[in-house]
Image 1 (cartoon, rainbow, N blue to C red):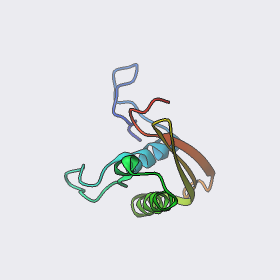
Image 2 (image 1 turned 30 degrees about the vertical axis):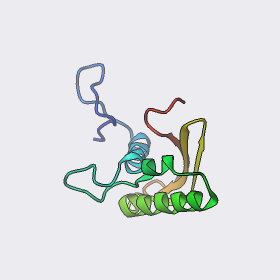
Image 3 (image 1 turned 120 degrees about the vertical axis):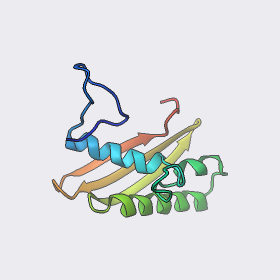
Image 4 (image 1 turned 45 degrees about the horizontal axis):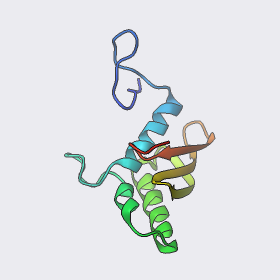
Length: 121
């Protein structure tokens, strides 16, 4: 059973669940948008992506962000996915992350876009 993220109740009043594809997407979002030090028992979990949103835009920052995100996904989800590419873009105050990956369990290639929590879509 995969617990839905964020935690919520379904229509029957039970813990909401997610299918395997949605669960994998939820795991990626957790890695992307969790700041290192935020989790008590895993202080190094996360990518630190949100800390870079206030840095001046430059080619160096784009390369650093891509490297940081790919490394975090490999470290924390390398047993579940193989990352093909990561594209990070920011415009009009919205941070978007496009992740292309292959699910190691199903061998299906997927492309998911993530938007920073609290951002206007």
